[in-house]
Image 1 (cartoon, rainbow, N blue to C red):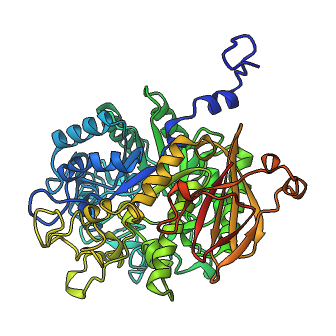
Image 2: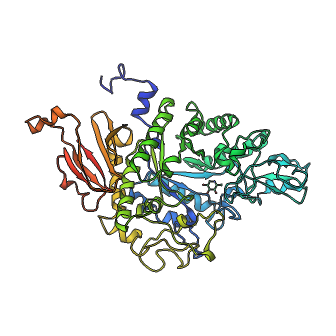
Length: 553
Ligand code: NOJ
């Protein structure tokens, strides 16, 4: 059947999806933590102009979309995840004109822009909360969740907040009632049972959609539906934060309404939900029947060790939970809430092995089936900064992974000041954009190479994934679609291995070499082996420890 023959072309939704997949399925997204990206004003805090200044670098790198963590008006109790105005830019980062400029310049380069949206809570300084707390009969009282404390002042229930693991309730002196906060006391939870709250939050989405953003990363959006009775959690779960427990039917109808709102806009806008439930099946339910979130973050892989069996498990779980509902996976190894994977995977390793693992992880992340998210700085192989007590900001101890991005080897590392809000990451003089761009063997070039490969090879962008059991220490999978196929092998064990690809033993024995399937090296994570000129027919090959290779036919 010719794909151009209108009479015979397969017009089923599945076929159309294959032919013209949505950008958010084929893109690689790059998470920018604005405070830490690049400061242009000299206040030590990264800003929107600093992001704009480096868009050309991101195009050179080859990512397709950027996700910006919050840059909205905020007193910064939780680094901007405590929003005081959903529809404005905090002066620390710039203003709305600067945002529009950034958006337009990103679009000129073909980069999609995803922004954060924080629907579960506001800042304590949001005017809505100021009104709500002012009296029990204020018109906005029910925009937040207020309850009477117990007779001795104890919290209304036994829920735990997620950042300092204290009670999820604070009693407010003005009225003597307690308000719910699944995060810091400075982040009161909105009451999504109130239709006016839902309408107001929808308006904030429209505000940014009208400005032209391509999508939203929705902060802990699985929290917008809560048990109306606010019942205690079971005794064995006491102490676990509510964010990992809250899985409610009410959320889904709200997600469907959000989806309708977004889909009504022209131009393929999207929503990716931060579903912080640590069970992939529960995460999967938030895709609905392709009528809730377009994508969901799934964190078990982020918590998996650098270990082939752990990865087989998370990959198989992903297939088992997402495939039956036709949902598209996402993959993330690092973000602003967790130690960087270069730090996690380095535990107990010699420096060379640690660096090799970061490189192998790049190949893994960018060859999986689904949408990968790269956290700014991982392409430099950055590890977490050591943050001395006097310079800590985050009440939950997440400062290390939020260290500023070093752009060059000068003392200011390309920032407008030498004193950024957090200390530089280790090795900033060697691991910075300028230095690594000059070294084609660097991890930065490896990311660039695999990103380019992902763009040019349908097998990686849209192909199926078939996992292979090749060797207990080797994570192995085939990506393929049509005539395009690639094999990915990651040696996660402690030893170099001889790997035998017994794909088709009969063909392998064929005396005519032209009839033997010739898997050749397309890319290796090991420095100096990335040149395609070093290709070799691979039937049996040495796979170094912490090496990832991509083989092609
Ligand atoms: C998840 C965000 O990623 C995290 O940084 C923040 O502290 C919480 N949600 C609360 O908004």
